[in-house]
Amino acid sequence: MKRLSIAIVIALLVAVPLVLAACGGSSDDSTPAASPSPSMAAKDIVDTAVAAGDFKTLVTAVTAAGLVDTLKGTGPYTVFAPTDAAFDAVPKKTLAALLADPNVALKDVLTYHVVAGKVMSSDLTDGQVITTVNGAPLTVTIKSDGTVMVGDATVVTADIETSNGVIHVIDTVLVPPSK
Image 1 (cartoon, rainbow, N blue to C red):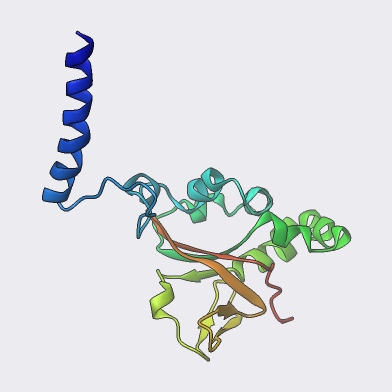
Image 2: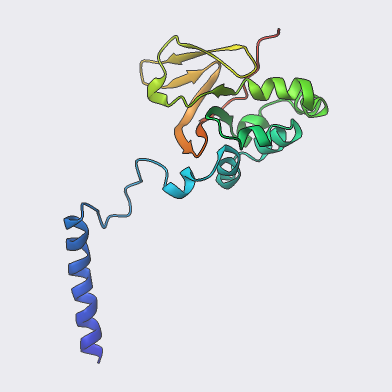
């Protein structure tokens, strides 16, 4: 029985890579997928941010500003999403003031991070000015090394597709120009 089990294991070790190769797949799990899994793309912007775990402050702010239903809507939307570390860099007094005025100040800041439509990184060009949902312009800069910036923020992860748009992770909370 032991020999039969060893023979089956050896046969599987030989057969699985051959079957995967014939189907165009790979048995190497170390290569990351080129795009998000279909299960991630099945989630909307809010659910994707929640599942990622690095956007707790953003999700709290979106909830306080009453924007959850909008960002769970059909869209499509492009969200430049600041991480928790980006929010940690905002002075506590400023963040508290924003959270104390969710319907105006906070909503103004958050909608400055959103663009109507699905804008992939390949759609962005150096010097491009895009209009955010709050109506203020946001300038795109593409540096010679390929680094993409929107306003003062660096895009650290691009093109996270969701069921209703796309998320680009940024390292800084964007502040809209005063109106």
